[in-house]
Length: 370
Ligand SMILES: *Cc1c(COP(=O)(O)O)cnc(C)c1O
Image (tube, rainbow, N blue to C red; front, side, top):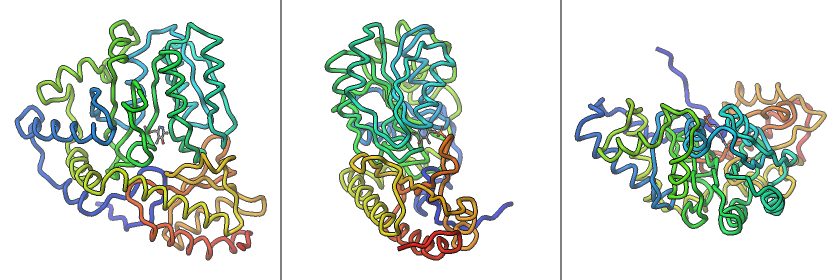
């Protein structure tokens, strides 16, 4: 058996798991076609709806977040459907790649990595192409540490144009406010290992009446992620396939904790810690990747690696000498930024520890902090 010691894991997923949630996951296996499971799935589904702030249908899938994103696409679209997809980072790009893989005709609306999506550009694109059926958007772009203005985007997509809105909320739900019904989002996908502070292995998706309407004629191939099948099974308190029971035990405890802390307080904690992180980074003389701090994410902070600094050595020393694990950049930013995750199970002390470590390591890798 491998035995790893605890690190200050500051990646934007997986996040650390609190001890009481770890304990809850030592429950025994149960029959997923039995009464205990019916109780469990009914309870956590209702609690999840509170966190999503929705009365739409909500499904728990056994997969990583990408499975729920795939479900959003294949249950609403047909090959050849025209969709508009805004991207400003690697998760926005991946959402597009998935839609393309299933045969959608994707119009890409691209922004610089570090920029926020401009809602006006979405308005213009929808006005120019009436054939567009759906708009795909990433709420919080984890690869750049930018939160896109989803509320404004949703108002345009839904109120002005009446199109479907598919949202990647993998790193925002449970961290940053996303009132699914308040903003009228049709399909909203997220995952267990980010804001929910439980291990990877579960994904969640809310599905609106408009989404079900689209589902009736959607012909993209689907089997494992067929939400019609998920709906039929959920009516009987089951899932179509064997669920990740262990993660569900953790989810049940995590939802108790989140709802007890109170969603407003959870958001406020993320806001406060993100602010503390950004101020600390600037005080060191480092620069944020986000072009406009008003859109800087409350879940993850992306920091530019200065020319003088040895990035790989920096990450290695932080981990080996200080027990602090940060994330590197993704895609074209892989050598030019590092990222500090402050989502899910995070306190200000965790970030204070990160700064103590940064102050020790930065001078060893060619950067003199202010
Ligand atoms: C983490 C993440 C994903 C991918 O989720 P997986 O659970 O790895 O499949 C997708 N989108 C965003 C915005 C993410 O942060």
